[in-house]
Length: 284
Image (tube, rainbow, N blue to C red; front, side):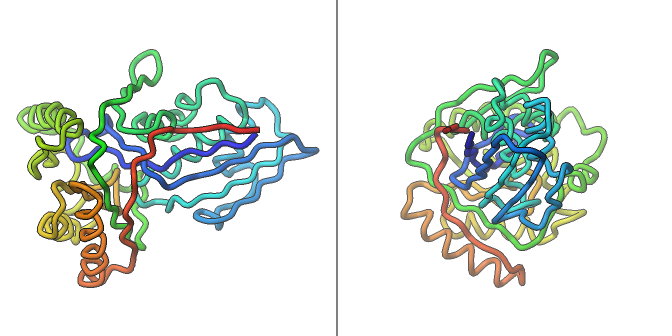
């Protein structure tokens, strides 16, 4: 079986661990019967160990309940850049191995559900861990929106980014993010409501910038100054997401993004990406 799952950009500013958007960068996993476990890979993450410790192998063997499998991974999703590479890989591996609920496996592998939900369902999603397992729902997304992702050549592992966050936050900051998330959901469905302030956040971005990524605030401001109608961290970084009003505006922002990375002395890429609206798909 062959499965393809999209990358994702999570949080979207105030929607910490709750919102994510599927993007048209993909992980493909093929799982086939074999005499013994073999793992091969190409593209992003090809340097990872090709043995039973590989995430795709772990997921596939658990779903299949045996290890007589050939697992091949092909990925265009940068690893450790806040684009949901682990969740997409887990969702694709589970689906290719025949799992009935790839979202569950993606959640178990990733530790929180929003990236896995976007990879499983596609589009803009809301997700919750819940007491009975992960829950997710598709949300309306204005088709006129376009997205640019700045992808520095700097890994920022989620575990490290999590350690930069405080154990407790003021009640006022939590309330700010809750109300901001509610309004952001409405505005992503109707881009006429979108304003830069809707992507402001008080739970994670400033803490991570101060500890791990001092260039981020300047880059986010530059994205807005060059035509984006919103800008935020993509997941735990190091990628940054710009939300644009139409493809023409996004083309300008993408070109500006390349200049921004050079000015910040950060090697990397500026990508114009469309939303993926299908989620994981499986074929024989």
